[in-house]
Length: 558
Image 1 (cartoon, rainbow, N blue to C red):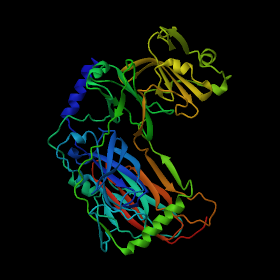
Image 2 (spheres, rainbow, N blue to C red):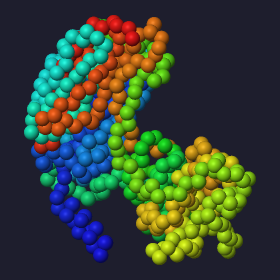
Image 3 (tube, helix red, strand yellow):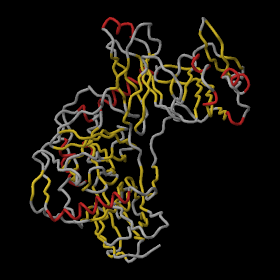
Image 4 (tube, rainbow, N blue to C red):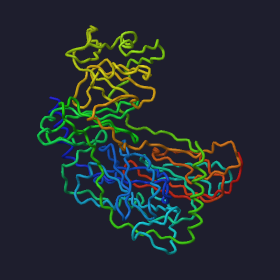
């Protein structure tokens, strides 16, 4: 019955196609190679007049120059909104770049013009003479208008800041909620490239009339695909039906399973893995003398972004670029210049909060793991069957009858499956900080486990664990953590000026109709102009954009 309902749901979703387009707004338009680029994502349904899409839970971001694909990132989406960052490589050549984003669902559409969804930024590398091929010309760049208003937002801000604290009020005069991002960045005179704003983005996107079914929409998170490498076609047949696992070591439950298909591939349905992590990849129960391993496939498509306009440079920009480079070098000598706030994101709910936790330092420490299980953890016991050790779980049924399971449970070390329980029993318990026991039945992929135990070490990185030769630990690019920040000089030594370029960044603010969002921004201690940008769209798909210039003459000391 459940399977029939799932098929019916998939058919309904297929009938109501959503043409997703993703607009990426950055904290500023001009960067140095090596800077951190902060971004806010708006995933809209092109077929519904630009309303936010509820379908996809992750967007794939690509940074392109005329030389090709330069960098990638992933942004988790929640109700069509997402945020993240991209650490620009320090060796990027000087030139204009396009930032384009898409979802797996949008890849099913034919003829998508990704250039209409792209944001153009300029990247300067003052420490290198390398330039994007045919992407830079020497001339006098023309400045673009700064002040602009679009939509139903009213922004109140002092045109001349007489103190370091700048109060800002954003009032929504419309009848629908406005979802916006806010940035306040220093204007050092470097001319920004001409790029799409939210208005031109919404005006240019068009839904496709032709769809394919090659890509599965990612409703709950990234779908990670892998293939089995190092195996002959004859051996591949023996892997069909066996289970592959991927897991990210740490204290979070990032563990997923997938049956190996007949074509020696595996598909893992995740709730999004956040951050760049080491991923442990393995196949359970491989026959002896079968030497193979899982290889994670890249989800990035290297889409076409059209012709990117040339970057115009001139000698008048030299001093501003050198000043930026100096500012960043001084800033990098300090820690804690920004107060970061982690924003809401979809959490992994494979395991709930019902774990029975044993912090081993609260008990007498024992040198053997068998003693730990006997003396401290009554929910676990070790038994030997057919020459191998099996850790069993004490379970309670609906009648409160207690018995140890004879079926399979899952044992983890720092969130990574350990199928050979002898390795856990011989593991040094002095490396383990906490043992979390989940005495219920859990589904990991399509596998059911009657009880889960996670042995969490102090270092949370699998110290001193020896894996089989088929296990591979690979670097994995997860979704960027969504963060906002407000510049706040934390240094007590007032002899150092504050050289920040971005004083305020909030990638996801919701302003209800008729309501006001207020905040205070601490401007840097140096004089200069700052650009306040508020950009986004309303709940009914209308663009909103306000840009203001603020001149700071403050040199007050704290």
